Length: 253
Image 1 (cartoon, one colour):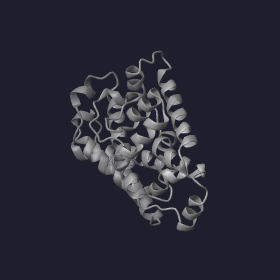
Image 2: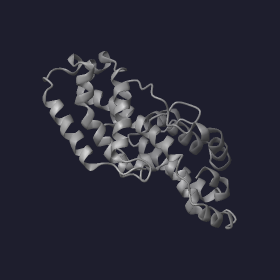
Image 3: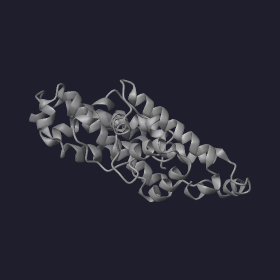
Image 4: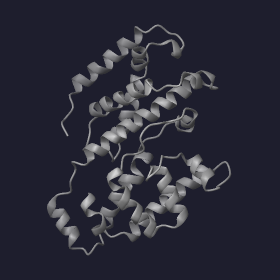
């Protein structure tokens, strides 16, 4: 990962601020495409900054790289806005921001996934792990947490509950190369409910589902149903860590 240029980053922030000041205030649906993109560039930076401090992006992508990929996600999202849905919602600004946030996060997550493929544990460390007869749980935890927990725990905002207001057609969290292998491990070590929670949450051979959607599918009712889904998710990941040998995941680290 290259070291980013602080001066360029500061100049970027100043340029964005100056550009926003030139935009005449009006209803969002009356903005041009370019005006919308510029207006929500600070949202991209905010999301990118949260990702930049996460374990997931550390050592993989710097803040400027994350902003670049997030901005591409914003541009694609702007082209897919359903204005009728936005305008008719109870809070159009929050609904629009929620939709854009989800697409920006999706773009950044995919970029991290792609770039994380270049990260490798030093060979001498791998040799140590190979000699421990599969008992190194640190490596197992690294594997499953990086896939199922780290991003969700590090990145969140107040807009998550609004995500469902506009249909999202973005690609699911990009773990396509691991889908078959992960599905096998999940089926072997988890009960049916735990398997379904992880499968639906992260789009294993299906679209991603929100916690509320999963709760509905699994007939988990109540105002705190989404909390229960989160508990099951963490419980399932912990069970995987306890039951899977490092030898089964080492080639993916």
